[in-house]
Image (tube, rainbow, N blue to C red):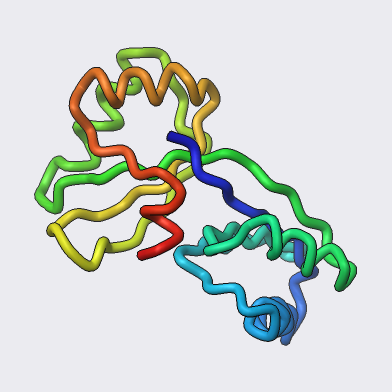
Length: 143
């Protein structure tokens, strides 16, 4: 249950993020989730969008450095310890979380965590084995 994420590398200067959102908007791309990590010189904008192939093409055509990666979207119970249950299980399985970010699912009382794992297939197997809800691309892109 992999979903596609695009990462866009940005100079850390005023207006750069607005430029990205303008290009995506004009291209008819809907952003479903995002995360920004930065240093003093550059940032990485990670996006889940409704059409990652089109977004990747549009951004590259506008001179941006873009990378597409596989991530996993997992439903997490909205209660104390919900995230810890996943992280503890993955730790015991020897799977490292490289990064994560989240958004709230509009129905169902769950958060959706977007994970990047070092061992994605092992992580997916363990998550399924332990009964965690994994979202496929169309579910996430259509939220």
